[in-house]
Image (cartoon, rainbow, N blue to C red):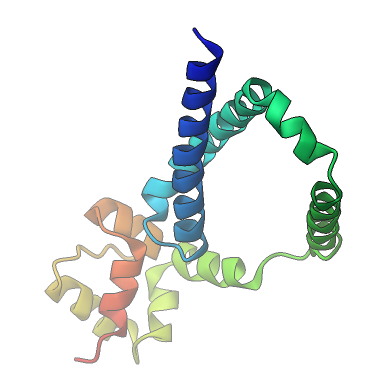
Length: 162
């Protein structure tokens, strides 16, 4: 393959993979369609790294001027400092949101339903009226799986006023 075609191909893949990785990254940050975006983001992220590697190789002559410039060095330093800041400020303690979610989703419905309703019987009635089959002793996660719905749908049903 001609060098010009290789450069064109590497640049095109780099551009479109960057768009997909950027969009799915933002979607994951806001938890939009996580079920669909996480795996795509991770796998295409690996492909992106490989394609960027080829992009640099195929465009080496024109890019080596960038690599030796002051702006490139300053940019790299700033990004490295920011990344290091994130690494150093990461806590070993569990994420409080994750702890709450896991507690609500994994404890028996009899215990967690009182967060949304006055008592379990009201919660059970709401879910059954919405077509959710309720089994005592099951968690919201288990009920969601057996009813083939999102756990968030169950919480939405429980949260609605009657």
